[in-house]
Image (cartoon, rainbow, N blue to C red; front, side):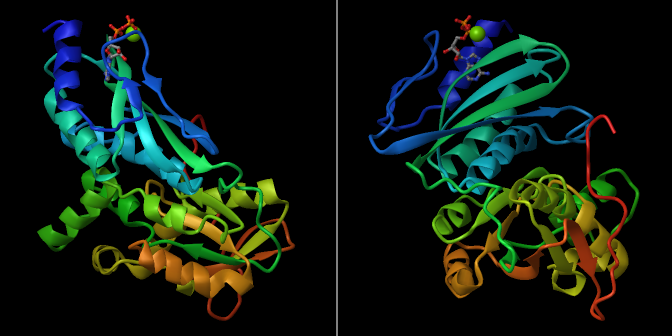
Length: 321
Ligand code: ADP
Ligand code: MG
């Protein structure tokens, strides 16, 4: 199958009824309408075979995750996702199944009303790059630089599951039950971008980031950008029943702090807005947990129940390290 047949198949699967898409797939570029008073929020992320996903990952998961990681970036900004572009590099026209890749991507796109409006299709090592575009009312985007000393630190859900799913996928651990390993693998392959949560805390949270490289690493970025530090209470970090059944508690805690791919949001919230934030986040369908506080001392510190420093040395995933 040739490039243009592939694009025609993608075009067939990618229909959407957004009225702000003046021109979608099929011309040299997409034409999109932006409402007055709104700002565009743009991001791009790549998934490479063997680096960002195990080579046995289902094609539909590739499409889902390539979009999910981008919607997660928009969520961290408090943006409403609107449009996406997909640059696809495939070893052959049939492998993996393009229909399944696109079905995975468009499934998630529909859940969020996102239109696939363009892209590029080439032959090469398996790789997916999605560009996502969203909107916020002018001046309301959440940023990394707003954390202030004394703010509460909140995460939107359980951490470590995706990293545990990866350990299961690579055979580093074996789960006792099929259901547990399925659940953890699903958290790795089909992450849930916290779009409604990000929008719900616009004007409430002081800073925001999505946890893609591990809580310590990502919270470290917030601290560096905000010129503050952070203290995390290890026993407050939320862990799923599944990770606790698959791994010893100390391993689960280490993955929750340093493992990647969770795509929960990590927010800092001024104390006087904490209750409002927790209510808004629950209303947005997530299970927020207070995990620590913003401090004056630079760096991210992890404390045990007795207040002893138990910060692990491994911070998170870094390319080229
Ligand atoms: P050009 O050569 O002008 O860049 P292409 O032949 O690459 O055009 O693409 C034709 C149309 O198909 C464009 O609208 C482009 O955005 C769209 N397109 C190509 N590949 C993809 C893809 N993987 N996903 C979505 N749209 C695509
Ligand atoms: Mg092109």
